[in-house]
Each structure stands twice: as C-alpha cells, then as structure tokens.
Image (tube, rainbow, N blue to C red):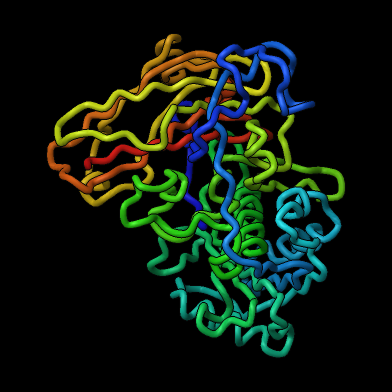
Length: 418
Ligand SMILES: [Zn+2]
C-alpha cells in the first residue's frame, strides 16, 4: 500500500513462502524448465525458491473502472496528470498489470479540477475534498476510483506513506468505490524526474485499488501478531495491507507506444511469480536478478548470531550486481535499533561497479553468500525483524540504476526469538 524510497551508488531491497525450488535443479542447466521463453537451456537461472502467490481472499475488483482524476487548480501538472489517466485507457500497462486478476481495462477517464490546495491536509480532509469536488461532476457508481494528486510541497498530515489508497468514502460505508492520494514522492536517484516518480507511484496505487479496493481481494493482509508463523511476505509493511504493487516496489518501466511514454511501476504477477522468474509485469528487457534464501524465518537468541545462506540468481547471463540490506519491519525493539545489526558477504566479496562508487557485497547468478544477523541483546522472546536484501546495479556514470531499468529487486527474510 505504500511507497518509501530507495538506492544508488549506495543502496537497494526481499522472498516467498513456497517451500519448493521452482526452477529445479541445483544444476543450473537442468532441462525441462517451465519458463519457456525466459530461460536459456543452459546457464541461468541458478536454483532458487519461488515467490509466493498473492492470496485471493475476495471477489470485489474495480473492473472496467471509472477513473476520476482530481487535481487541484493550483497544481502546475494538472493537464499532464489528466493525460496520464487518459492514456491508461488505451495503453498496455494496465492490462499487463491487472488482467490476470480478472480486471477489465479502465472504461472511463473523468477529469475534475478541484479548489486550490495550499496547506497540508488530514486524511479526513482529503475525503471531504473529494466529496465536495465530485458529488455533481462524478458521483460514485460502485466502481469508481477517485485519484487525488496533491500539489508539490503538500503532504498528508500524519500519513506513514507518500501515497496510499482506501475504500471510498470509508470501509464502513463504501459501495465498492475507492480513492487514492498521491503526493510528490521522492524520485529514485540517478535521473528519475519528479513527474516520473509521481506517475510511477500513481500506477502502483491504481493497480492496487483495482485488485484490492477494500483490502479484501488480492492481498496478504497486514502483518500478523506472530509473523514467524506465516509467510515472511505478509510482513513486508509496517502499516497497511501488502498488495500487488508493494511486492514489486523498486521496479519501473517506461512504455512508449500507446502508453504515452509514462513511467509506470511494474506489478506483482501471480502467473510470473509461480513460474520462478521475474515476478513483476510487464517484463523488463533486462534479465531479472535477485537472491534467495532457503527459509522464510530463522530463529535466534538474544545477543546471538544467526547465519543465513543466500544465493544469487538471474534469468539470463548478466554482469555482477550489488547487495544492500535494510530492516523493513519488526517488533519495536528491532525498529528502535539505530545502526545495522547485520552484514552480508559473498564469494565475490565487496566490489564496486564504477570508479569512485562505494563497495558493496557483489553478487551474480550462482554466487553464494551469507547474511549474518547479530540479534540485539535487548531483544527477547517474541521479538522479530524482517530484512530486505536488495539487489541493485549502478550505472558508473550516475552511480545509480539507469532510469529505464528497475531501481532494485528485493528478497525478504525474517529472524525471530522463540
Ligand atoms: Zn502499495
């Protein structure tokens, strides 16, 4: 449901609950790969676990939705943001992101210009703003998404995320409609433009609203009380539901023909995830790369060390990439840690991809490594943490991922104290 920020000559992000190795074979070139067309007969991908399917918990979708784009009159990008919505109707991205979940293309794009917004607003004020601006122009029909952009510099007071979606007008009173707010989320470094970040983030929320308008359709739900008893992917978010946009955070694609050349996020695909390759759709031209670890969760002790094996895999031969690991969720003791309590290493050691870049743990298809987690001594039984192992690459000229490629890919692993 969310959006944070990411990487550079310095950064990057995660894993599933399947217990089977998808692309079978510890031997890289085992024949009979089911990823026809994605995987060469020899070479990559190295053995790795499969990604988890996004659970299907209900049937409500925003199929053939009415997309109402609401932009404040003082937003300098007003006409551009309207155009982005119009291009969704005729473009390929929306279907690539949502068709496998049963969502038919956007049926109608309605533009509404709202009153100027000059100060931060609360969630309740946003809902009232939408109601006031659309009651006559575009009343709810049970299948509408109200997409509200906030002008540059305006935030949602108290919001954990820079963009999110909810049932409209509330979970208790919705007749099926949804609303989303998108602020000026921070662009990825390396040259992504402010407006590219806005449309990328908007696309994330549109796909999630279409597939999970009320938090009860395609979603892992929220972090469980005892996260280690369930898929680690359920515990990706500190707040909100884990949905089809979230597990592909870090990805992006610019689609020229028919989609207007906008920057979109790629979206979680159950079809692709179970194939064992790139889990995000539409596919990128560049061979997908990531790491995996053998288990979702590893038990540890207060003050003890947990050593977790990891291994790199890519769906095609490619150059080295880098690892950077982040704490992405956890109990309060873990979230309160002010410095890293983990380290990675690999057969490649610490490497750089460009002159003057920082060194990170190097990775490639078939390369093995280790994530070492030093459990804080303050942690006690019931405490837990989810780490995101980010795989990323750097363009030596910018020190960041090229803007026409994914910014990072992630694999999740959890540690807990029984
Ligand atoms: Zn999301």
